[in-house]
Image 1 (spheres, helix red, strand yellow):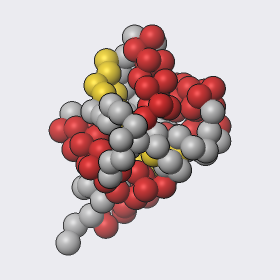
Image 2 (cartoon, one colour):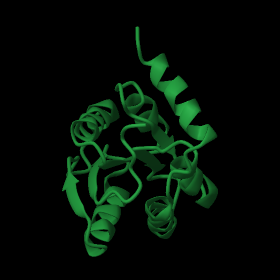
Image 3 (cartoon, one colour):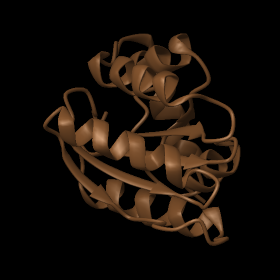
Image 4 (tube, helix red, strand yellow):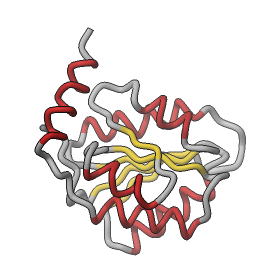
Length: 154
């Protein structure tokens, strides 16, 4: 399966206004961990449309195999829906430690989404670290990801 993101060291970050503050925390955390980081916005609290940033991050991830996207909006739901419309993206919505691990382990997610109005900075950095430290398990999950990829063809 292409886009194996385990061991990824390049991250693309994006958020809308509701997720900007948490995104900034995650960007700083990733930089402190020594990862290559590109912040694709937004950079202010002015109202913006989350699909624009989901698209920026999703297209960057698809263009740079092995990279990972991190998206933050109010709940993470809108960002994950929008990102999953881009062929080659497997965005997982993180809402606890288990989903942070399983998004990588079973789904080999190449984008993660979180809710800036729903979780604390400590939860966000903990879940980010769990996701990054987890490897894709392969095996039966590989077959399932291939079936998901086939859904992307017209």
